[in-house]
Image (cartoon, rainbow, N blue to C red; front, side, top):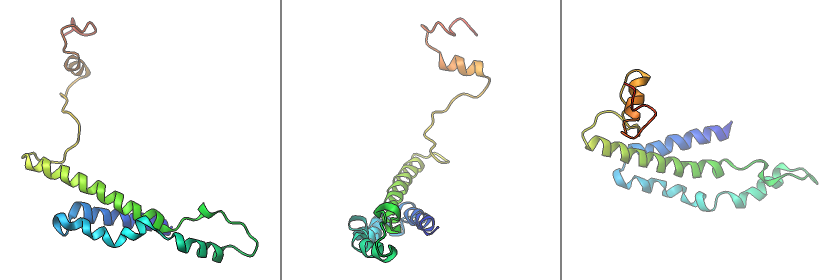
Length: 133
């Protein structure tokens, strides 16, 4: 449950830093306080936590309960990079004078499937639909 909350918080934080950019192009510096956990994590504390959870003589797998910071902090950086790239793409789209959001799809003609087939196979050497109208 708490890991889910940490993932949602990382997504919101990544969107806030990457898309909203409160400090402009310097917004990436807001990730600096989280950088030590990205490289070091809570590894030194994990052994102490494992000893506290495991009883005397019990065996507990180390990977059975990863700390939330091992999941949330890398996701914060990932979501920030994703939102930063999408925002750059959106701004370039708006700078071109287009309205709406970029979809990444090419425009296709509307209409019945035969007109789509005619549009799709418009080569003169196409034997599948060149004689059809």
